[in-house]
Amino acid sequence: MKRKRIAMSSIALATLMVVSLFAVVSSAASVSGQASGTITPLAPNLVSSMMTDTGPAASTSFTTGQTQIFAVDSNGTLWNTSMALSGNGTWNPLGGVCTSSPAAVSMNYSYLRIDVFVRGSNGALYHKYYQNGWSGWGSLGGQLAPGTGPAVASWSAGRLDVFVEGTDGALWHKWWNGATWSGWQSLGGKLTSSPAATSNAANNIYAFARGTDGAVWQKYWNGSTWSSWKSLGGQIATNTGPAVSQDLNLFVQGTDHKLRRMGVGVGSAKSTAWGTLGGAPPEALSTSSPGTVVLITGQTLVCVSSTTGNVWYSADSLDNWKVWQSAGSPPVSTYQSEITQGIANDGTYNYVMSNTALYKCDANWDVIMTNGQAAAQCGGNHFGPGPVYNGILYVLCTEDPPAPELAHLGLFNASNLSFISMVDLTKVTGNPPTADQMNIGGVAVNPDAGLLAVLSYGPYGSTAVTNAPVFTFNLTTFAYEGSFQASNHPTIYNQGICYYAGHYYYSYDNPPAGGATSVNGGVAVMNTDGTNTTQIIPATAFVHGGEIEGLDFRSDFLRVLCGRYVYTFPFQATWGQ
Image: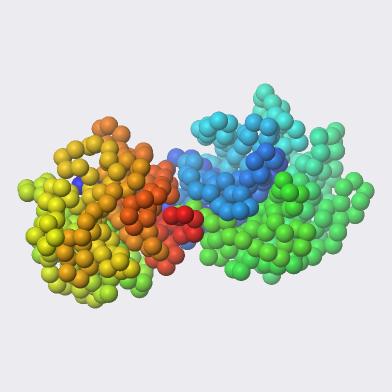
């Protein structure tokens, strides 16, 4: 609340892929450095959740049963989550500046190594891997066609085969033999999509791509030679490509933007005819390639991205993929130059708190009105975050630097931001703590209990690690009612608090010595008496850095302010359980 750090870049969700810890197919991506761009004060960069013309790829760990999902936001950051069929994990940023889907595979699932490939912003192939931790990015050279990315397959431990569309439109191949990378080999053809590839046995590879006629074309390695190109027919939507699983289920998005499937014949066996699936995701498909993989259960999973930015998957292959579930996505973030302290909403409008001013914004964060004297009207110069409830915007106000410390609660009319009144929380009935003892951070309204919950910023004048104190006041009379602490979750700087579905959520920072970006902060949830405190979002989820400030819920989405960016996370029913 009282020390500000600023991150200057923008973010949006982009690409999703699901990765195998065995073998996988995927579509394109790119990476290098940090994105640049112009950010206009109070003009938001509100982003959608998936990058145009990108989509998922899929694979599963045969030792853990987890499906590895990778996604790229519009700022180019690669994200990863581990997803079991019973639910989704937390998204974690892996860096980079990607512009389309990544490709990933595990070439030796016995020790859970994952290799990820993307197209760099200079057109070259880039690579990173996980083995007891993530490596940095390394360039493998080459030049990929714009708007396309790699595919990768593995037919044995220590073996990787990577395929790309070159700038000449041909399929190009590069492989790792366990010790060194080969040079680039042209396999010819004329591609109009990112390729797909898989292996279903030792020393064989199947490669697929969209041809100039819109059909799917196949090429096959039999252990000694490559076959000629063979058409499998069908018609694939423009800007999409095929996906293929290890059991040779081939999926595409048709020109009607519905999924189609073919079982690819092995050897002299004929392929099945193209057919539709038994079910479909509840949202329309985006213009992107699907992803697919064989699960440990023997089922074939297929996943897609929707026009709203959600990722959907079905592993119901025994019943023709009728049942679809959401796999979630990385957080959306919105940049606002004046958002330094908090955010709130009334279901229609957004409200922004800077150090001294209040802003009312529309759903797109465009400013409608401002109260630039709001902090002065509350008798201080520094706001703490608070909510909108029953047409009133509640905010905390203090002095920074403290001279002396204040614990003022400001009430403003949400319709026009006009000042209603100020309550000095140290002078209400009920023998409240002093301003120094409270050292106010943020305030929440708990309508179920008729309470205001004031979160302490931390021990006054100290950097001691303590369980966060919360002071409660009557919502109507403002009388002091008591306090509690978050259980078994020590923090240093506590910033914002909100109430949702019977629980308090609060944000905090545990910065390293000397300041800099929060490394141990995040967002936690607790019961209304402070018990069962659990971190639900780590600091690493806030990729632009900065202090983790106010937070609120809008519909079923938790929104968190960090470094002047608002990150949006889908509500998880397991939070607080």
